[in-house]
Each structure stands twice: as C-alpha cells, then as structure tokens.
Length: 284
Image 1 (cartoon, rainbow, N blue to C red):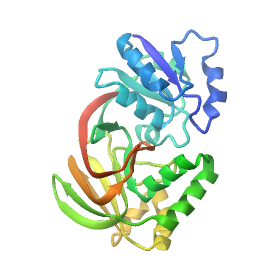
Image 2 (tube, one colour):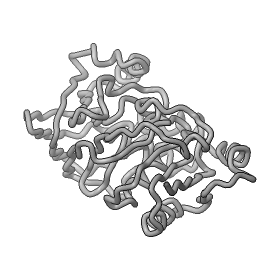
Image 3 (cartoon, one colour):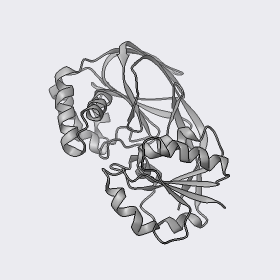
C-alpha cells in the first residue's frame, strides 16, 4: 500500500510548523510539506495521478476540506493527524494524535457520509449567518488567534442583520428570520461548540440547526449552552431538523463557510445534500 502524508505547517495557528519535524524528519516516510496556499490542492491531485492508496493530512479541518475537494471522486482512503486549532471533525470521528507510523499498519476503515453545498464538498459542517460573517471578518482582518476572533465577534455584532430564509427540505418547508444556520455531518464546530449533537457520520442524513432572530444580547447568552449541545433545549429559539436534500433561498446575498473555509462570494440560493457513504476514512 502506498501511503503519503501532506503536512500543512500553518495549521494550529502555526504550531504544526514546530511539531512536524519531530515526527517525520529522518524517517523513511512518504510526505510533502505544503508551505504555500494551493499546495495541498496540487499535492492531492499529484497523489491521485501517482496511484497513492492512502492520503493522510497533517493539519486541521480546512486541510481536510481542501484535499477532499481536490480528490474529485478518486477512490483514495483519507485520514488525518489532527494538528489544527479546533480539530472538530477528528473529535466526531474518534481520531486522536497518532504517530505517522500507525498509518502504515492495517487500520479501521469507515465509509462515511459527506455533505455538498452547490458544487463544494464538506466533511464536517456548513454554516451561514452570524458565525460565517464572523469568520469572514476574521479572515479579512488578518488578526489571528483568540484576539482576532474577539475583534471579529464585536464588529459583527455591530453590523449583522438577520436575513429571511426559505428552507425547503425533502421533509418540510419553513420561512423565518435567522441568526444562524448550521448543517452538521459532524457534531462540533469552532473548537468548542457542539452545534449538532446528534449528528452521525454514517446515517445517510445531515443535521440542521436553525437559530431564529433574537436580540444580539440573548444570542450571546446562548453561546455557553452550545458548548455541550444544550442549546437544543431552548426550543423557542433553536430548532433541530434532519434532511437528505435542502434548498436555502435568502432575502439577500449571504456568505457561508464549509469546515471553517469561507466562500469567496455571497449567494442568494444554496443547494445542500448528503452523499451517503461517499468516503473511506482511516482510523488507526
């Protein structure tokens, strides 16, 4: 079996840059260090062309998302050594930090679902609304870490306006003003939030969390309850749903994120669906 590792040194707020040599340098391992933007995408396509059987991403959810979309449906086993900031997907999948040699051995293989929004795949979560606007502000500001997140939250609080959205799934139709829309294949988001606590990677469905328009003060007060998924009990504000196919039609253009990666442009309509058992995921 041909196993290759793709290392994203920027993952984990740059901490991966210090960690990876300890586990790879001087060892007979097939790896590529992806220093520049776009290198993970190119390295993944090279792996497909070169007949790699198992591709392991050393990084976070964003690294996984980039590789996933670059695979273009190729039947390659995908895995991760989680060194990102949040490692949300790894938590749901039950993957901890393992030394790379473990991936050269026989591993458990799980056929897991994927999500798709328009033409982009996601492995963990889709989000639109307050959290997507915050992520975009953080990205544009260039301020990283907890300080960057705090600055982005405060700025978003001052400008965010809840859009009206029509939600049409294969089971129901809703129309409401929303603070936040989250679709989970996995359970966690942002390193601390359990937004879709009942999500299952192998059930052939995606979980939807809708937060209705409320005052910004009350919205902020709900955040601590989402650390352990208790926000779902606030049923006058939060509603949970499941679906296989969904169309979102917004009153105005909105940005979204998948696995923490923000869309390059806003959209008024989005098509979201589940791809059942579409990926072979490696668990040591």
